[in-house]
Image (spheres, helix red, strand yellow):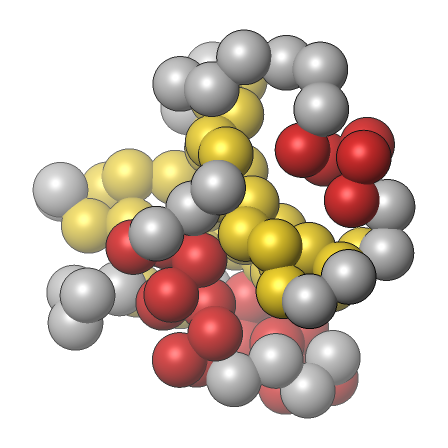
Length: 84
């Protein structure tokens, strides 16, 4: 997935949180779950005993990453709401 756009905020957050672009791209390309709310989508991918959550919106047919974070709350993010 080479056509990913990152906002300045998104780049800062993945750098601060030591999340590689490859990890973000993998979550976007192969999410375990996607949750959409209006124009914003969360791509959620399990990584060992945690999840990465990538928050993005589509602009000009490209995902624009707003932020991303790692969470240990796997049940919160992988259970409940249906996939998009």
